[in-house]
Image (cartoon, rainbow, N blue to C red):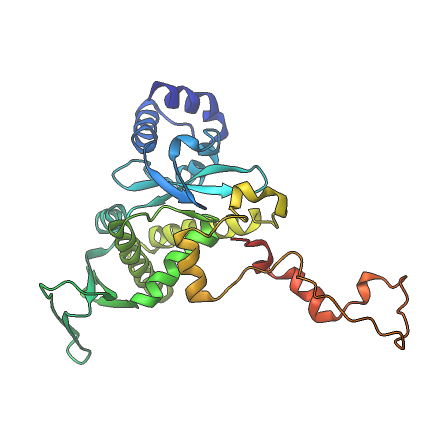
Length: 314
């Protein structure tokens, strides 16, 4: 903890707002307690100790500039892979319990209920009377979906729903787009927490769009911070040369999260070089001019190089 605190003190000038001793202690404890957190990248598992310490400033700055409290009770420390540096950097996001606590104490949201629905459960929605009937089955079964009910202090209620497929798509998008291949959801409990948090954010977007929340600014800030992390990751992403296989496991079998992703989305990997089949020589065929430029390739071939899927390379 002393090492983390001393590092923050050396980099405190990088923040727009100076941190007091209590804030430094809270952040240092938050980071120190998270250093043993494991995540998966490619075929191997790492911990937060493998992340570049100086990247903590860039991860903290948006939250500190927004006036949000940095504490382990509200937030989770994550890692993102930086392809240009061949290393991991810190990323921060609010945990599910942190989001619920923040929203119910500092906004006009009175109560938040988030439940997972399994296939053996009895679930029915009465839209006319705005009621939800959900009986949880004692028998284990596959996840069917997630629903979230947000009650406002003015008496209004908002319902958001996500199917199991939508929740998984959101998790894969977060893993591959925001964290750039890093998978922090290594257990079923962590996956379920992410599903619920995604459903909650869907409800918050509805509230933010309708602009009927008394403290809409905080809701918009939380959503913008999350969207900013996606945009930042997109800007950092670039095509990886094939000779850097040890960082992406190009010469090995794909990891479990990669296999699931490809099963749902199809094979998104575009080979850097297509296999060439031997051709039978025909003496009657006129030999093509070897001085032709590569730019004379068909347009559909050239366009494929501008696609984002080219640099995925799992």
